[in-house]
Length: 350
Image (cartoon, rainbow, N blue to C red; front, side, top):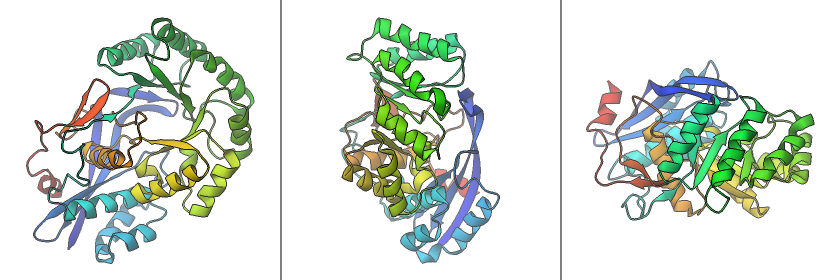
C-alpha cells in the first residue's frame, strides 16, 4: 500500500464571519491510499486558531503517517492522538479503500437516497441586512431549524434580529439555535442568556471561552437556556478526562465535530460518556470540503439521531467538489442523480 497527501485551499463564496474573525479561505489536506487495485481518500481538515493540531509540525506528521501507513488504521489512530484531524483522515481513507465505491463508506438508506438527514440552516455573522437576507433565504429554502452565529456584532442588534424572527415565526414553526463561539465574558454571560431565553431558543453553543470549567459549570447549572459544549471538547483525548469534563460541567448538550475530536472513534467515546449522564448530542461538520462532509453525513445517519444535524456547509465554497450531496427543504440527501467528479482521487494525486 502507498500513501500520499495533498494540500488544498477552499475559497469561500463570500467572506464568512465568526466571533473569531472573517473567513475567506479554508485550508484542508487529503490523505490518499493506493494498493495498486483501489484508491481510498480521507480529508484532514484543520481550522486555524481552533484545531488543537494547528501546529508547525502538521505537515511533518502527515508525512510520517504516509511513511507508516503499514501500521494500519487502529495503530495509527493511537499514534496520532494529538492530531485529531489526521486521525479522522486515516479512518476515512481506510474505509474508502476497502469500499466498493470509494465515496460510499457506510451503505444505508441515506446513500440509497431513500432517507435524508434533517439539518439546520447556518446564518453567518455580518451586518443586520446581510443576516436578515440570509434568514429570509433559509426560510425560503424550507429550513425549519436555523443556527445563527452571534457575538461579533452588537448584542442589541442580534437581539433585534432574533425578535424579528420570532415576530413572524414561533418556536413550533422555526427552531432557533445560536452559537456564541465563546464570545461572552463569564461576568455577563448569565445576563445575556436570560435575555436570549425570551426568544424560545433551542440552545446556545459555547457561550464563554473553553477552559473555564468552574464558570461554565455554574452557567450550565443556572442557565435558563440549554447550553451545548463545542470548543470545550477540543484537546481532551483521554476517555477518563472526557468523563471528568462532562461530570464537572454537566452541559445540556455536546456537539461533535469529527475533525476536531478524533474522527468517528473519538466522537463515539464522547457519545458513550454523554449518554451515561443523559446528556444529548448532535454532529456538526467543521467546514470540510464535500469529501469530508460526505463521510461525516454517512456516518451520522447510522447513529439515527432525529435532531437536526449541522451538515449544511457544502455550498459555502466556489471550488468544492461535485458530489451527490444535495440540500432540499432543510434536509440533506444523497442524490443518485448527481455523482462525484470522475477521477477525483487520481486528480488529487497529481
